Length: 186
Image 1 (cartoon, helix red, strand yellow):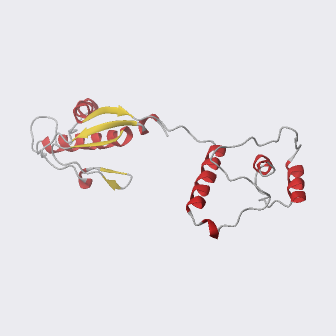
Image 2: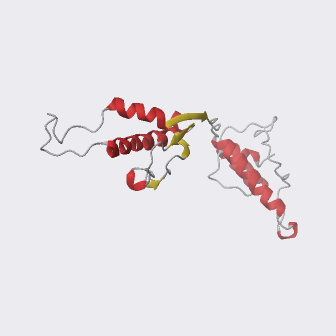
Image 3: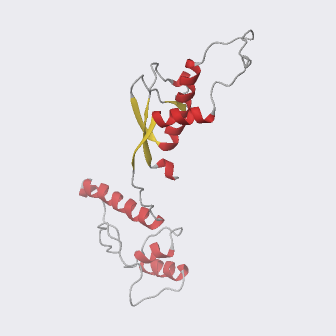
């Protein structure tokens, strides 16, 4: 995600008409209508899009009707706006309100610990009689990760860990990482 995802802006419809999907209040196929005089809080990247289209609609509606018989020397194909006119209107339409804090990205290990904790919270809330205790005397997971390697035993590779698990009769998923498999030996 980029910086514009976390910067929140207020887009205000400063016109006297409703800004709807037909008038350009669309982003990624979704409508973001803004009634006349009302505002909408959105991330900056959506706000820039909506403000630009609203500014264009305002300028289009204010444009005089011209035809080829006009004698002002500019003709009917004269542009309705330029970039500076759009930029001036956008400053009136869109105001930055605040910036959200970015979520701390989770590592795969953090996500796994959280999932295991959630699974065990669900199990704890279920009827204890319907759940059989795992073989091997593993202590219930309390949401805190434990050291993955016993201090007195060091396994060189995943194969040694699997051999020890088989020797002890502990069930495991062979696709799990060496670290995860070592945790079953504690």
